[in-house]
Length: 223
Ligand code: CDP
Ligand code: CDP
Image (tube, rainbow, N blue to C red; front, side, top):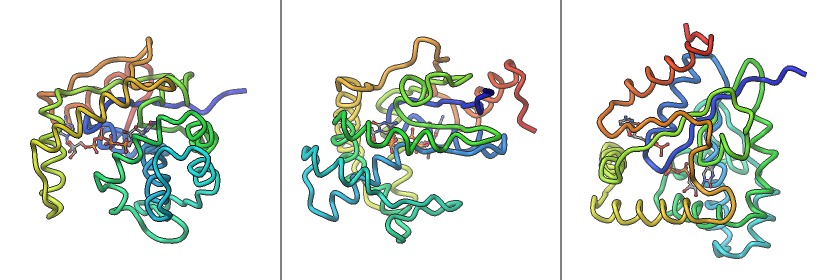
């Protein structure tokens, strides 16, 4: 059978995956999966229920029962719009902890694969090209220096009127990188067939153009 095409974009936190993937998806008119938000939803629900981030059994139950709907820009968890709350650093750090549990990842696999729908899917995360969509026709791995990534996060938080401490962000980001790269299952690493892009001194628009060029080389044009 002819499989729906997938463009996989992986990389560490604040490398620009989400921004680049959603803009490319819009340009192509394809579906978009922000897989990190699924891990963040489990984290949020665990915080609500007071479930510790190392309680594999209860976290798997949460992962299986997650009642989530992605409606345009909104993300609804058990009916409530949680798009803004999902971005909290506390939620992201919890997501990174529970994402190290193999049974939790397993419980979220089908949910992610279900996003693969015609005419195509752009998926971003840590293991899109390695585990979830190994047959993606194009895999991009974005990186940027820890300092550049911490500055991007800092700016995002300040722009939203939230307080942020740059030094704290650099420390958290290094800790999260280490946890994501060193876990036994689906660690953060480029697939052997991924195209690497270091965006340290690039704008988000330049990174988008880079990806569109790689698509054109493969005969996919983005209007
Ligand atoms: O999804 P990920 O955590 O990798 O990053 P993001 O949420 O897309 O955040 C990246 C932030 O850095 C956004 O505010 C972008 O506008 C900005 N940025 C970027 O994405 N790419 C660059 N090359 C430069 C800045
Ligand atoms: O936006 P940011 O890159 O900070 O985080 P995210 O993409 O929303 O993901 C939050 C956490 O979920 C990450 O630190 C990963 O540990 C985990 N995650 C994962 O393990 N696999 C994915 N495909 C996506 C996220």
